Length: 149
Ligand code: HEC
Image (cartoon, rainbow, N blue to C red; front, top):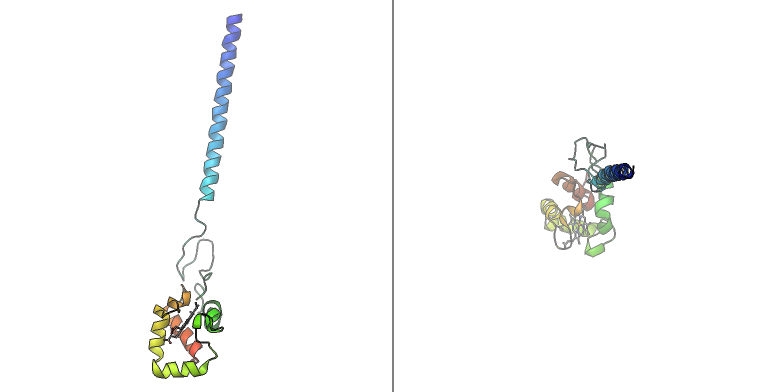
C-alpha cells in the first residue's frame, strides 16, 4: 500500500514535471514568435514605380511620388526650401534673382545641375532628395533659378 502510494506520487510528479515542460515549451515558442515579430524589419524596401507590399508610396523622403508625376514645387518645398528659401548654410535664396542670373551667365545651367547632383561645399548631393532622378534635379534647378518656362 505504502509502496503503491509512493509509486503513484512519483507518477504524479513526473506528470507534473512533464506538464511544466510542455507549458514551458509553449511559452518559449510564443516568446520566440513575439521576438521574431519585434525584430522583423520595420519597413520594406520598394522601388520607385513598383507596387509596394503594403501599398505605401515610396515618397516618404520626398521627391517623386511612386508611379505618379514628379511634383517640382512640392519636392522643392520638402527638400530644398529649408536652405534655399532661408539662405541657411549660405545657400543662395530662390528669390535672389540677381544671384541666379549672374550664376547662369557665369557657370551655366548644366554646371549648376551637375553641382546640385554631386553637391558643392555646404550643398548636399541632390539636396538630400534620395528619390530625385537627375532629370528631377534639373527641373528643381530650373525652378530654383527661375529659368522654368
Ligand atoms: C542643407 C542645405 C541645402 C539643401 C537642403 C539644398 N541646398 Fe542647394 N545649396 C546649398 C548651399 C549652401 C549652396 C551654395 C554652395 C556653394 O556654392 O558654396 C547651394 C547651391 C545650390 C545650387 C547652385 C549650384 C551652383 O553651381 O551655383 C543649386 C542649383 C542648388 N543648390 C540646388 C538645390 C536643390 C535642387 C535642392 C533640393 C533638391 C537643394 N539645393 C537643397 C544648400 C542646400
